[in-house]
Length: 576
Image (cartoon, rainbow, N blue to C red; front, side, top):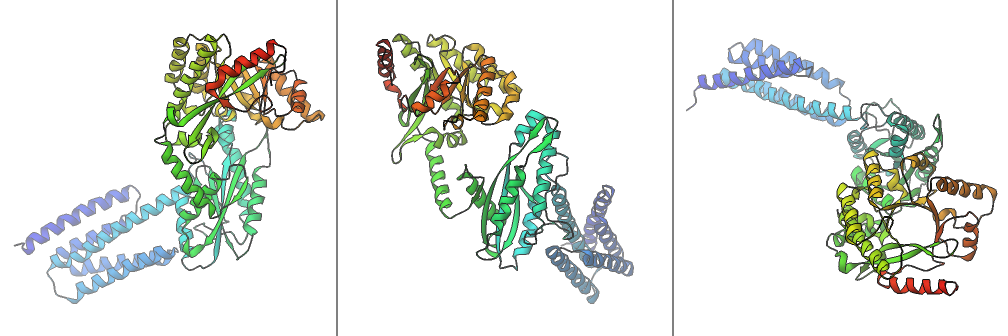
């Protein structure tokens, strides 16, 4: 049986321990004052000094009532009001009944626990406030944190039946600016872009998610380079679409700098819903789906069909986790033809997926998903080995034709991949240049010094390198002196139409002459007509590729096709 003395000793120990904790918290500049006073009050009650304990409680409650009055947040106001009522109720019970001092000490003990709970809540609020600055290092960006946006939006939508539209802005090109021009300059450009967006956020229909409503509205941060605005709209209104286009135009305005004219790009997604029925998380998920399934549109709008596309995408990811490279994938080839002479410069291997329901699927439709499920690395090894086998077969047949593959992403650039490539050359009796790796322009743009050194190692072991997509962006020119290339493919958009205007010819001439100076062979791809072929030949290029010569063919027929091509050349016939 617990005696009153034992209970008093136990509770006194709790109060003393809490008092020490409160003092430590105060020394760390945290709000532990109320908990300290509750501890002192409880010790006074246990010691029999009821009047002193009640006075300390009353003063503490008065101070907290004043703090409650100062609090502006509606939900926080309700929580603190409930705590205050609970404290008054417990104090009333303590004064209304004649209880042993140990039992009376239960009242400040309960109040003290509430104070510590409230202290945790205040800490959480402080964390949210700290996060509201931004997620970019220690710099202050004009954005609202995701946590604050969720809290303010939920408070607004509780009693609001209106429709709300979300504008999600995904900034692109920031990482490239960091690599090429430095982090400080990149952050300056990003801040200027955010300032431009926030100018458009001053419209009355844009929700102000600031804690202090006297401050101007700002975008909130969804992820490091994704930002959002919420707009209250009327039914059948399209004002949010107009605002999205204005923001897109503002981001694409160029910035003048010492390094030249610089610009970021953006992709913007729109969605709308009934605010009371739709959490902010749902709006964000809809905008991400919109961007994912509309890769070529600068401003795109969410629709219900995207849910079916997302379901199909999830199914494709599931299938790719178990797909067999040997039985489900197939390799095709397409030649690169030398000019002049029409000799085969090399053949490019193209990956296809023989799907049981959807037929033959181009690699561009699934390669990113294959990387997403973690199988891109193994696929690179598989395709490189098949390319080595094909190059050896061509050589044994008396056809000295190199074979190229595409590098799908920078994640496969490891020492193990370089070692494997060297082993493939050795085991298949291939010499330097018999295997070629084509790197899409975005892969080159994303390489740091370590990955560039791996590309150098690849070239040293005998793998030749080809840039695929020259002309996609002029920023790449700053990296060319650091990369030794053997081949360069001009982006098809530059030769899609025959354009003899001086501006277009000057652009092509400049790009081609620069790489010829760097001793790289220049190839124009996407050639589908004789007129295009005649046009690009005027630039003294080294090779061409396109449907004019052949559509992609199955790789198991490459020997027969190559023999026929060579036979026609020997007979001085047109091989295509």
